[in-house]
Length: 189
Length: 265
Image (cartoon, rainbow over all chains, first blue to last red; front, side, top):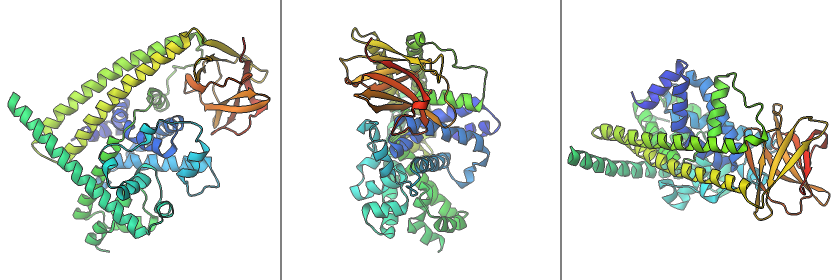
């Protein structure tokens, strides 16, 4: 049983400390996504609080057979954030992030915080922008279609290619590090 | 659509991101029990999770504190803090930083060890562990930055040219007060929220600068923040805090003016 599975098992029996540990493991990644969607630290922090409180209350509905925990909590974060954006801007029923951005534009955020990092930032632009809009900014397919003026089929193709590329890169990187660790381990052993 | 078509369609990727339409989601759900589909989805999830961890940003420490309070209500309360506690609060945050930095370091070591244990299996989770180790290193760096920020706030409050402006209560909120640390030599000011009452549900505080008779919004904030950075506005004649609907307002709700004060002492 890996750490996350163990913590979830404990949380389902009401263990608050296990939940804190789970929060420490996942809050940074979830907060990073929320922040990119709302572009405001105070709002993102409030939403993060809401997301993890919901996760605590709904943890019994999480089924590891249906997907990874991160995917589960990411979806809660995405939906909570989109609902927040819609509530802030009732006339904007699509939850278009760009409109929200204008509204709160006076509250500055460091560009570095919002810029994509890691391997996803190194993807070819047409793939990177699809991942950024859909995964990190919470756009719907229709919003991406309007933003980039490309057919829905192209969105699916590019998203698939982008994630496939990421998977290959991460796997290669993982193997390289694994070899390094094994070498160190055997040398020291 | 058969399972191979589904895997190649791009729908699994949309499903994992949550950007899938209801109809498409039904098509995916129908085939999720297939081993090949499940394996493909797991790989997509791992890649997205890895990207998420690479882009992690450390949230403020008060979020966890609030969640802990919310899921396990206790009799501890923040009520009763006085303005004079500001510096003590900063010291507390600094101590928390040291503890958090140590925990992050231990976690990084622990994950490194876990990684070597899992190494021989060569499973795809290793890449996620790698990302988490890197993420923790980044977290540590951010904690260092955060500590530096707290030191900056202390230095700001103690600065020769910093003047504490006490915003006093109006009849709407008797007994309330707030302090703005105002320094004409810097582009920023600092608001201490200790002394303001708890907000009603669905409401926020908003601070306004009175500039030649016009109220200019400076910041929307809640009681979750003990110290709120503000822009320094040299032409502000007075500072005013009102209670507004969530998200803030374009114009102040003067009937809910809680505290105010002049920028000259």
